[in-house]
Length: 460
Image (cartoon, rainbow, N blue to C red; front, top):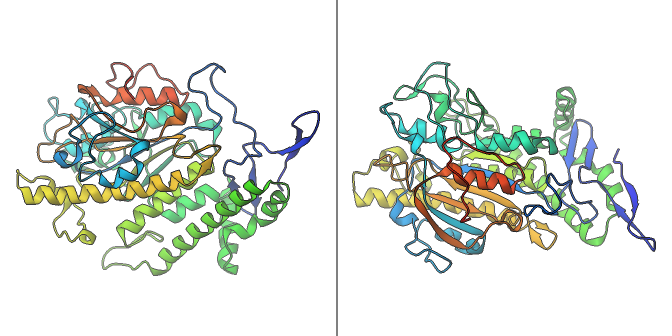
């Protein structure tokens, strides 16, 4: 059952207060709570006078979009705060004050550097590591630890899940995927060590179970079987705890708790609907729970990611919307050509417009995600204010397989430590890993070096 205590707020009155790590519990079910006013501030990792301390925890995520971008339609012409939003980034207009467009960053270790073809595999492998991937299609893969796992090693112990890896694409850990490079490089961006990828989860149902299932596999299986037997929601198992807690909360916290429980149930219903109506294609066993509609799939994963941050189930995540080199067809945009085929446009303006349309689609979905984060209140700010979300690709122009002046956008204010609302152009070929070192500082998980970093990016 739920355990909480009354903590004296002053000598004149008592205020109900619960620890930040309070959970609602039931058979095979454990639900973290969103940040409530009744919760004590989280324990700080640095000294009290650190400029990066904050009452609320900071979250960090990295979203990968495949095959680069049509850079003319991505890059603002002006720098500073008064830039005009280009075509691809127009969906970000509503969140102008919450983002930074970063131009000039590079991943030079994604270049061939003597290894020949294989830019798509290197783009993914290098994106969060800043390291040159060993060219091999065998099991002797080697690249480097990724920034998310550097962070997870430092702050992961403070949350139920050290990190959360998501993807809307197949997970492949072996085989030859790109000109002699292992599929492990192309289908993973998170690396726990230089030889160990962190395979992402693709099934929304399994992500949901990870977020709300018991730590005991046996209890989780029993809970799932019981829910299916009686057609109950996961919330049915924690409502006794929730009702007990609610009686002791203030009006604002009661409303926040109700909104949170409603959001969880809505997500559960959507997952169940997808499982119910997902069809099995000929010669292809579609995994249970994966939506057939790609837009719905991406948004469902974004919802789960937002919920994981809201409940502080994790503070670190990666999300692959599609692997680099993907030849997915975007039928919903009226495009019959494969994405990878289009990226080799050879200067054809019609193909470049189609690439821009695909790029804009991905930014529309990202805008949806930012909206979810911004709608979650934390004190006088929002969950987005306390987040640092990088979205981009390890390739700039797909036709040239360029790995400099990458399409990169940084969303969130990092607990007030980021200067959002600008287009920033850094020195040409500045290592992307310099940005990552600066973000690790703000997460209170500093590192001296990462991959090919040469220092910290002070402009952000």
